[in-house]
Image 1 (spheres, helix red, strand yellow):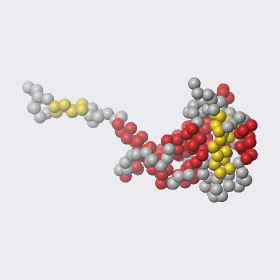
Image 2 (cartoon, one colour):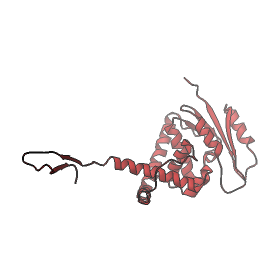
Image 3 (cartoon, rainbow, N blue to C red):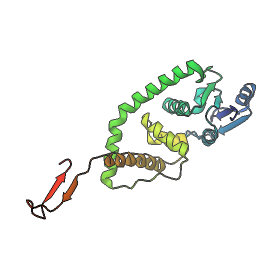
Image 4 (tube, rainbow, N blue to C red):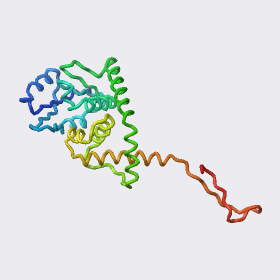
Length: 223
């Protein structure tokens, strides 16, 4: 059985000086593997190393950060990430807020986060379905974009379900708006195709009978 690992993540914003303060806090918690993002002096945050950390971490591990705001620039992005990691069996701990999603209290916290996220998803579901039918009407073909990793595809869909705009998602993941649009549309089209596949199909049987003309047909199924 693999040993539980503590993975640290550091994010330094454009108005902050350096990462040494966060590194020291993580080392005091026994973290030896640290992923670090330093944002350029722009209004668009970039967290490519956060994606690498999420890809490297495994079930049972812990992700440790200084504060929750290190994980995202908006509340929906942070909440969706906490839910994603919770579903993967990955614990999240913060030093400043003394938050830990492991254990009984953590399970209750994740349940509350999941309930809040589900509420947000239900509020925008109708608009999502409108996008599905619009995509089908345009005849767009499905296909997952290759520009995003599997982890970031999940994050795009989770953020969108939280109500984040395409621009916010693109800035959060450091990708283009076109890539985000394609990812959302591909997922919507796959859902629509899956729903169509479940519709009952009519079955037509043609046979010869002394009492029926040979070209007569009996159709079974919904009309």
